Length: 167
Image (cartoon, rainbow, N blue to C red; front, side):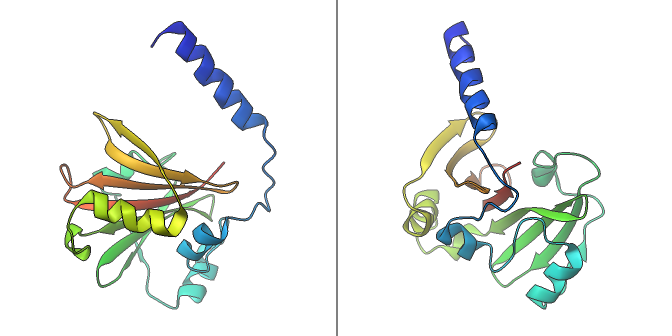
């Protein structure tokens, strides 16, 4: 990476670190609705009572989720639904990430453009990214949450939507 780009990237990271982000920062309305009534930092028991559904502990996180985990001490729980699976990640006992898998067939057009377009209608215009390692994805952020929709059809055969507490 050229020296100028490295220094610009470092400056951007520094600015992001200096921006005030209180523990009580609330997600935007669109992101809050995607959280389905959950809040970052909720304890597992509170989440189970809120969802009124069965969560199953995941002893060994799948490969596609492992690179998203901050440490081996993260707890992972799974909730299955008709057309999706959601992995909930808890760090120090508090909810930090929701990682939802969607079968491409859940979207009539069956392509990532249709999937991301449906999310852009919900969250607004997205920032597009692409890399050899991670493929292509779209991203939104607010003060408390980072949202990514990732096309993992070439590697794992699904699309995913990741909602992650900004730390």
